[in-house]
Image (cartoon, rainbow, N blue to C red; front, side):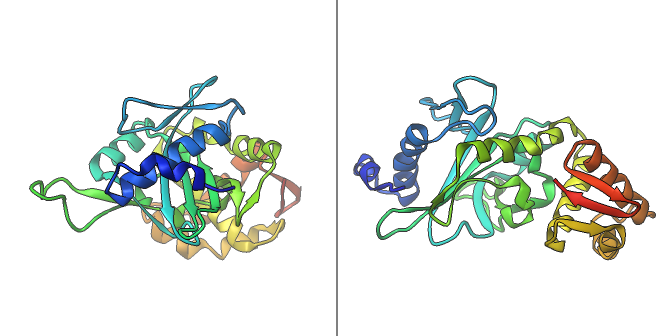
Length: 254
């Protein structure tokens, strides 16, 4: 998919960030859909600082972050640090769209959605400096490398368009995380998902997961029984139909 026909919409703008916003927002509104229900998305015309799109059917909303380059990268600039943390704590942060495109021919390389429940405070990084004339107003970056792969729902990956049914399936596979209102409990589930992904296999054992004990202890220093917590998280993932127990101490992703 290509952005070129939308670029002329930004001709009256000087800032590169403004230009990118002006031509990527209509592109998304015209070509994509809500990954939760499949309905069209509607661009907001009032320059809402928190979200750029509303679903035309369900209650989901989305903020778009776009950049030039061959990959999405690890770090994406965002807005006010304290405001973002507050929204995460209150479960009021938006879902995100992330898009990157080739700066020479404007081909879209990757476009994905990330559900808001995949955001935790540890992936929100304060920038070292504030903004001019407001030194105490700290902006932030989003460390998207800290988001499990299961939380990155691709519409386009490496220029390949993903079937709509697959997009909807991938989004709803982890929708049970909406139930995790506690940042700590959600953090444990997300860290467990990251560990499972690092194994890079569909079938794995409890001993495979125990190898992450030290890593998880560093992230959850107040917990003194990491192995028991790992077993608990695997039980939750089984109950939510994310994986299955094949036999004692053995698991399989669905």
